[in-house]
Amino acid sequence: DAGVTQSPTHLIKTRGQQVTLRCSPKSGHDTVSWYQQALGQGPQFIFQYYEEEERQRGNFPDRFSGHQFPNYSSELNVNALLLGDSALYLCASSLADREQFFGPGTRLTVL
Amino acid sequence: QKEVEQNSGPLSVPEGAIASLNCTYSDRGSQSFFWYRQYSGKSPELIMSIYSNGDKEDGRFTAQLNKASQYVSLLIRDSQPSDSATYLCAVNIDAGNMLTFGGGTRLMVKP
Image (tube, rainbow over the protein chains, first blue to last red):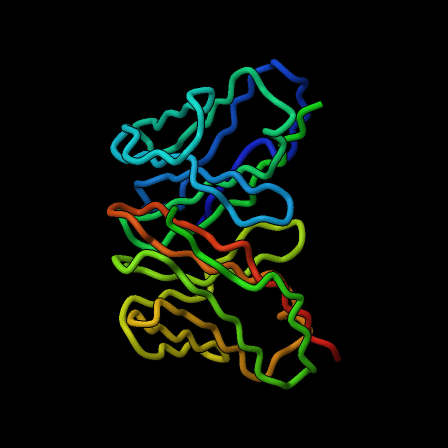
């Protein structure tokens, strides 16, 4: 049974560029949440998708947007990248409001 | 500001000892509480969930919840060097499934 998968593993971008990160949830899960984890800190909630709609959103600017597809996979898009967007981006999947399981993450470096 | 607080550590314990990790949260309406383990360079791994007051045991791990004191803890019995990691406390504060994380406690188990 495959767990949560994310791609790419690592990514290097320059300021002002746009990036798309991808996530496939664990089999049987229908909800995907995205978190940003800066070095030495706990993850911070970006948003959550359920039934192809954004259900909740954390305190992140509109530069952060997302999408969920009919197969429950999800994308996180970040526009106009800033140096401060450098972080580990984590996708977590769950069955509705049950426990969340994290993927391996995507390490984004903005130069 | 709804917060989750943890001592950043490091907490150093000898092999075979009991490690005690603590977490406080600010929102009395919180209903769900989770402990994640995160090895350096890896993503968080769910190790315990607890929803009602009291103790919950799973192998060498025991989670303790006291909603009146807004306090949740994790005990690790017979600590092993492989338990050395950062332990993240997460709380489901709002309605829905958004997790708010503490900053994590770094645990070091010395042989």
